[in-house]
Length: 451
Ligand code: FAD
Image (cartoon, rainbow, N blue to C red; front, side, top):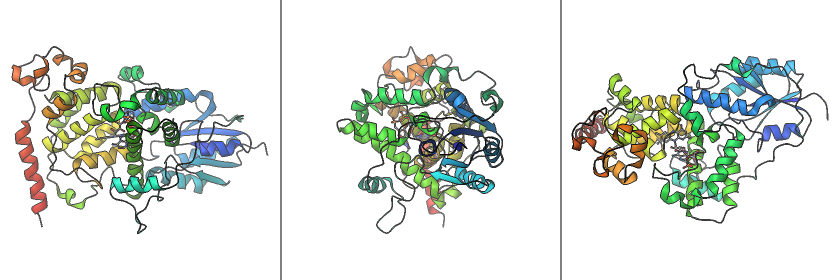
């Protein structure tokens, strides 16, 4: 033991339990926990994520020393200021974040150690028999489940001896939005490790049993709502995995763990494809005849398309920073296929407005809906917003919650209000879905027919 502390650099892992870098550092003596806000550390955070980060750092309180600026300058500066003898962190799967980690490592004159990151199975460990990475989810997940199970989570270090180190006040990071559009988010969420643990406990205490049935019904509280906590690493996938596995097995748990598997798959994909958010994985999609229509994009963003399920989803997103998965798929299909607006524009809007904006999940999911991804829905599968609404929101509760103009509509019209004539305050459909579908299929056919 020596009294010089080890600096633990927090990345997107804002927690104290099951934190390999922190656990191993704390075993050796005092620790400085440091976080550096750097807009050039990977993709600059969107507005909703900045709000979340502010709250999550608030929850960590005085435990963490804050810095702002380029990480490769700030982390060595802090390490020197607090007399650190080494710097530890958990490695990121996102190549843009690992590039920062490589620069920090190079800039430091003291020993460094990256630990396993926030994956259930380390990147590169899940491979085909031929040793190549998987392109398709189902065999990927089958192979992952055949590996030794993820290790048990590590405990929160006790005692945790924190060494003093001067840092910035949280306000100096200027993360909070200037306008107060975040109030709806504050009502729904409790950012931080305690909020994450409470969400997991609530979910495993009930909804998980009916998860397989209810997870597609946006009006029901049928999913875990863990995504923003996972995106900021306030809980680790290993903690979730082992807590779920400790319960009697059932369809709900099986399906829930499979969704965590999609998170894994996306991360493994991003680690190989740093441009996942911008470049279609299937090269033929690079020539797709997209439309440039800022007005249509704006209507979609604001939830003014005239299709109730779409508008409900986009307004839920705007007000809470989250949208139900089924509705994410429907709104994404509408933007890409009914409006022929590039999926990258939708991905960017989600990046800015989701509290769970995640470089792997967001990019991989948009490519999945667009049909341009590794394991993707075929382009010609185009969601009909009316029948999707009637199927997954059969009595219109979800639409009525988020689109108050339609709250008084009888069930038969809530997903196609235009059949009642003009509803005051609510727009008519911005496109005719049947015509838009034909147009999209023709564009896709042209793409395939091109030599
Ligand atoms: P649960 O159903 O409780 O699932 C548990 C966890 O599994 C989630 O928290 C998430 O980490 C993971 N998961 C679930 N579904 C998926 C999926 N399809 N792909 C990858 N991981 C999944 N998820 C994000 O975390 N961040 C994003 O930026 C994001 N963007 C998306 C964009 C589009 C167009 C679509 C269709 C999906 C996107 N998803 C994204 C995936 C999914 O919608 C959310 O993870 C899910 O709705 C989060 O709610 P939950 O935590 O209650 O999920």
